[in-house]
Length: 243
Image 1 (tube, one colour):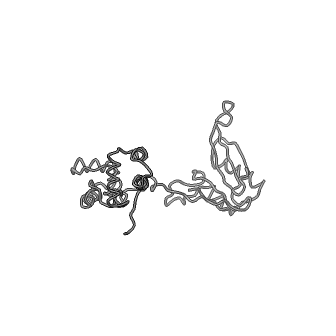
Image 2 (spheres, helix red, strand yellow):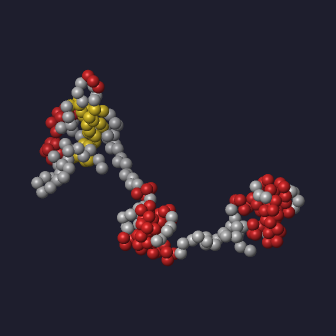
Image 3 (tube, helix red, strand yellow):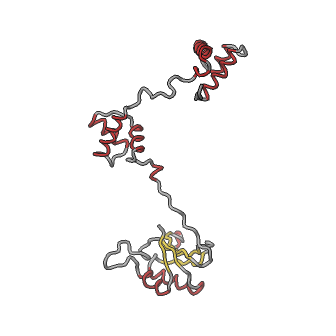
């Protein structure tokens, strides 16, 4: 006799029925332990005595469910979705199939079919993960530069921008400067102050602010603005943008 797969509940029933059959437990004990009626316990006990422990296994195990949808219907539904509704989500596709094609099936079934066929990605599958950028090893090698607009002085002054230069390796604040706005000239002044104090770094790391990058380069522009194409190139300092 080969292996018989059983659930934990079925194994528990076999153990209790074996003790009832051996006289170690009463039927009333089995009723309480298995949460069944006396009639159900006697029926299971009869099957156990006739065919052994394997008879307690659910008879539908390993058999296709009665409500299984035929694979031809599944293929037909997927064909309709691919041909006419490829950009629809499972919910809308389910409604369209029922309304226009008389094909009634649950939304979760359609979702499962679309995922298995690669038409639809779950929210978890659609998530993209960016590999974190490794920090530089040496102090002063890479400097992060950024500006933050805020009411730094609350009601005691106008809103302004704080320009920040941060060492990438150690997170040390290298240069702080309050300016009216995040402009090319304000960065020129802050950069001059930084270079006089700390010298020239290998590279600067910034966001994609228009001060550092032309949003839509064309045949007349290179995609770099003055602070990048002019000053940084003259100082032989490279610059990269965050993604």
